[in-house]
Length: 618
Figure 1: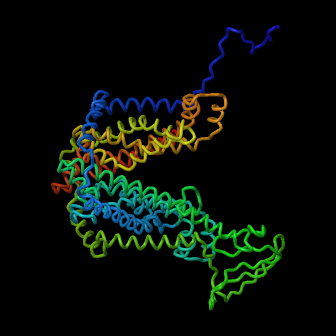
Figure 2: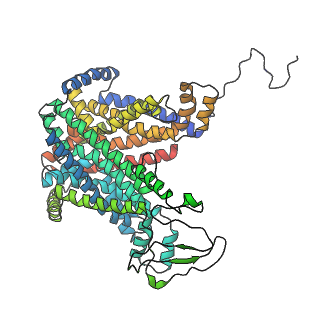
Figure 3: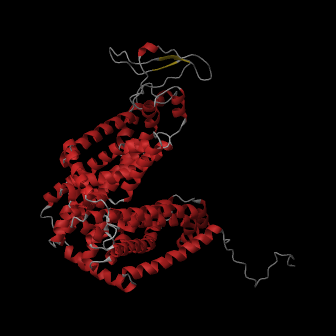
């Protein structure tokens, strides 16, 4: 049989051409970024004393430390439990205080609700400054001003939380639908009326979700503030480590992990069950909701019995017909109920008969509304109880502000002259710690992320094991890891790099796993259908799609680790934190302010740079 002629004709010995993706501008940017990341990794490893031989040697040091800590000793477990309870109340009080203070800043920082350009600029500046300065720096100042105790930790967490909540609250206000707001303004509503009735009902669900997320962050923060005397379980850990009682330290670490993991899970359940109102597999109200639905279905005249409509929980059955009366049964003597009588049938026009003298319209008392109301009441009561436990009273707050003002007065003018070369050297060392830990952490956490993605994991065991490993890493704050690594490998930036690198498994790994799970599935399923192996699916179907997201997560991780590395020096893990702590301890407050301003400039500058990089690459 003759072979067809033409450009598509191939011989039996011809090798088919290899298809290669074109060199687009984005691909060239990724290649350049990869070379830059490799170069920065080499320089940062040299500057921080990290080498492959030292990394392998540190494994033996960690094993030796674990042998000294095992088994845990629960000799003072009641004392630790009391400190854990105080830590929880510190978190609630600090988050509640931050919510109260963030709302006015958010209103003034939103372009559609601010009172003027000056108010907008001042409120935005305060939000940026409180966010850029690490919380443990605030804790150092408050401990020196008002003394050792949980109140200093509450004020430090509350002030730092304003930076996050104020910004995100303001973003939610700016993104709220403007139709109802413009209609109210056109009707002559005042600024307060527009805010209370037009904006707040739209943004409150988002605010609640953000507040619950901030609770998760503050739980992790609270356990490390004790190292500078801000109370809570961290103070107990610092005490037993100073006594070299490592088995008791392991007990406290376990208790910290249980607190952080429990609050994280409860917060996730609350966001899904209370805010969204959905009954899902992870909803804590699932069983009760199903029992209630089954009971409603069995009622005579329900939707399942008549097939004429649906029953909404907490309301009467819907009855089909040409005219329907929708109402809640009025209580005896109730004159506030509104009746919508003789509603027209579907497809017809008619008038609704509403008596204006019957009172205002009220939403039905559904189960979801009752849950939200009861949750709000519990949250308010818990906040006041927490304030009483930690001593956050109006008188205590006023005296604390006076003491902080006295310390603040001693900070001016800032001293940028004394030992400025040493300060800049430690600031640069902080940057190298963050760079080395980010690159090494992303490399280490990527396999965990792939195994923890539900759509890529080779087995259920691998999925659950990887997710559990990331949960354990998230349950141990980076500063606690730094303390353990300092004990194992000694003082210096090498311990800080190891702490942040291991911490990336729980932080960056989870972000990458969630991103991989959200990838489009047709490409992965197509490779599976043609018989591709698991390795081929990962390297040809998953990683090419996920690479832009992974790069974005890496840049975000570096942004976060710049902040985290500034506090590692407080426990001897390198960076500028050591100098900052010594200036506070020696009452050199003018130098303290100078270092805080340098940290602010560095963190804020890199935050803007990372935002520009994400925009250019993604």
